Length: 211
Image (cartoon, rainbow, N blue to C red; front, side, top):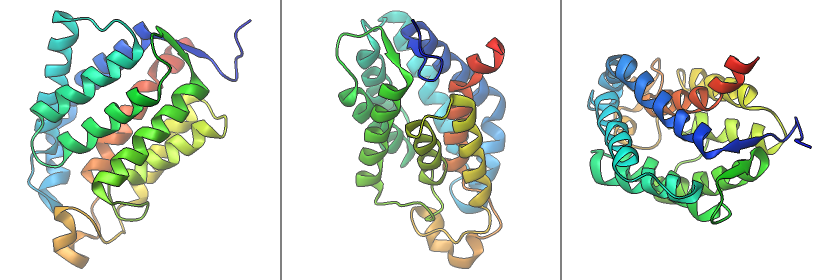
């Protein structure tokens, strides 16, 4: 019997997640660019949209055999197609998640996925040297993943990510290009935290539609 507190996610659902990410990025890339214009290069949304469009092309041309292959393919594609820091950071996040997932699986329970995502976050942090409070994507990813590890559902995790995003507004950036602005980085939400929140909200979308 399926445990409602630890639901099983099929590979098809995770592929729909990536569909949602691309669709959201298509409609929100300009708003992400606008956030990035305040404290970065004004291309965060466009870069990620290009990357996740490439992800969809790869999924259609070479469907992954299992969930670890799905995450690995996303990571490799993002590293190869997204400019700036976002490609290596998100790419590492997906690659390290893939390594932590049980192999040869076409479904994964939420707690196992949460542990794998935590490993992905650790990989991202090793690369970017960022902690919570540094005004980066970690500020959205970390509380969301912590929520999942504590047994919360995906909607609660997405809400935690959104809260983490909002909490970046008053922060002074300590990592990335925005850190060069010092106090001028205050008053703006971090674009990386915004895109990370988008990812978590898409992952929770099926929960909403099934409610």
